[in-house]
Image 1 (tube, rainbow, N blue to C red):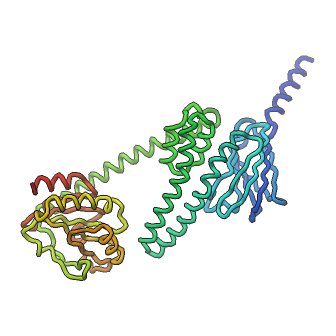
Image 2 (cartoon, helix red, strand yellow):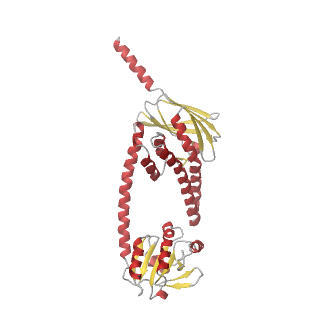
Length: 389
């Protein structure tokens, strides 16, 4: 009799543990009624598709412990990723959660009933959603510009897309900074797609939050971070070795002569500068580091006025974009353009084996290659101090 009673107690306990989590979603303005649920159950991945009827759906999932449920309205699922927001939930047995979703153009605004945690979480996500949607739209336009080889537009749109993403992240970071011990930070950490942003949140938040079902998030992150750092260190070492090898090539040889057009269409030859120290500045209009380094080079051009000449050689760029940058930055030295359609024999980038922008080459008074620097390096200016003071 006692054995039967114990069995009944065990069955009741098992039944209690397997009581389903209940999820209700009310949509306002949903156009595509298909919604997919994805979750782990009994060591296997379950994918259930549900049709929204009269703007609502109800789903019960028999979970025995905290489980992540991915909820993907087809309308916002593009190329395998949710655009604008997400409806992911970590649920436990007996949870009863209602999501009231307002469907916008490219994103969702979510109000939550039945969970204080998710109500607070979505108070943050709802602020981010418009910026995430803007980022996606800008990405599409920048890809189109790239396909059309419109580098200027691609660069402008890419910058705007990054700015939109940064605005969304700033909202999450401000929340994490003000509430480092909030469980919401784990959900934000999970939601962020850019790894460097995950790292910033991870450094702010209370690490003791990573427990239970959340522990796997931290384990994945730390493993990925280690792999990333190892690969980054290896790539940097290999790049530095290549740069050092490339920087050494040609040093001591006569610099190949060339003749290119300046902004006024007049021809300028390297040979005409014989007897002066010359710095060849190879750059491109779309190169951020090139532009960042220009003010520093201008300082040295003024510091040693008359003692050396700079020849800015723009490559892989459109002529109209080149003239705009030269004018906007008020570059005081000789500025010439290496035509994109230049024959191989006249291609100055190939003559000097230019593989990256910016690249700086110092040529001595006799016309020989004295030093070569790949990237914006302080060593260039240290070398100028040494030879011109």
